[in-house]
Image 1 (spheres, rainbow, N blue to C red):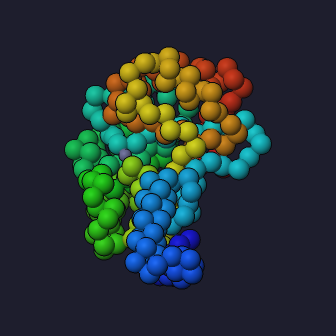
Image 2 (cartoon, helix red, strand yellow):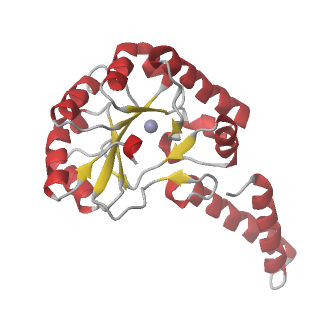
Length: 246
Ligand SMILES: [Zn+2]
């Protein structure tokens, strides 16, 4: 995994290469533009695992997939989602935001009691924190972990970076905490989608063995489509399992 020092060394190597056929000023300019574009491209694509090894899909030939729900718990939709999961006997993974867990501890209890896994999704889910020093990122995730520990009695060892943003500071925090980063193979876009059928189609057409599906338990549309989504996934011959079982 790349660290800040590696990025500096790659930038230097690129500059030396560009300087062989460009003026120094142009070589500096081109190096900065190329490096910034490359870093920005990788920061926002968790699947590339450039800075952190994130599990986005389980390597398997078995037709199994995993449901994950981010940004809850939410008093309006998390209970509906839990009811549907229970009815279908499906276990999922919930990446809880610390301040939401603090507001709705009974929902965190329910998630845990009903056999779902709970992961850390930071305390405040503020994207700006990703660009602050690793000590601040560490405080954010520790704060969320302490709240989840107080409620459930166990500290999560799974972490999902808000917005899928990864960088060397988040990598440093993860290394210190011992948590594993979990990404996704299928992004549902349920945060912006307005069309239920299109949303179900988008997910079901991308299914492959081992896919981790990203959903949100604070979205009305997600609570509305979930039952049909589970049926569609199962009708395609896939079994929805818990990450705890692999
Ligand atoms: Zn999120």
